[in-house]
Image (cartoon, rainbow, N blue to C red):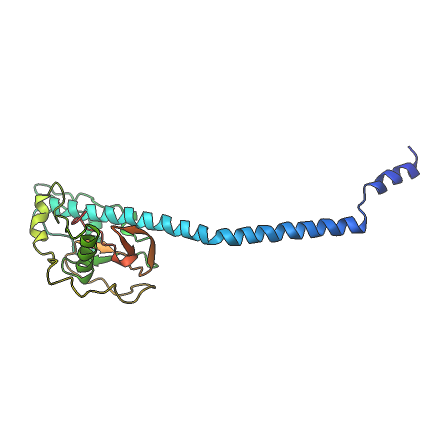
Length: 222
């Protein structure tokens, strides 16, 4: 093969300036279409991510509710915990010297709030009053039995401390400070449930409730 022949073969593989321009335009068009597709999918991806966080929050919240029930049931005095730390430490049943763990550390974190801290709820807190109203509306005006079905006898003394629907929940609005984060301190003392510190509207509903801080996770009304 002569040098001239070899040069000719190499030259025949080169693109002309016009062909290179068309290839660049095609590449830019493809990148533009890809960016448009990604921008269109972004809201759906964000929504799916939020949905998964909400499902995780519900799963963890119900773990906390079950841990409170176990704590009350095994506690010789049948009193609830005074703090999340106390709930995490566990409870010492009658006749035993070693505490029994009732809650995983991961469930003690709220995935919806920036701080990751649950807000504790006492029997007669406004959050509990509002929750009772909401679940009653969800159940067509029938408030579920607070000790569960079948009833848990260990919860009966605490159930008597819960607010009654009549005269307590009328006049409540949908809640103030929509959006953002509740940065208030959890009050000390016995608590019977937890709720998220996120005040954002939810994608999914929990007993028909569509705002994070109105989901109360408690062994009552489950």
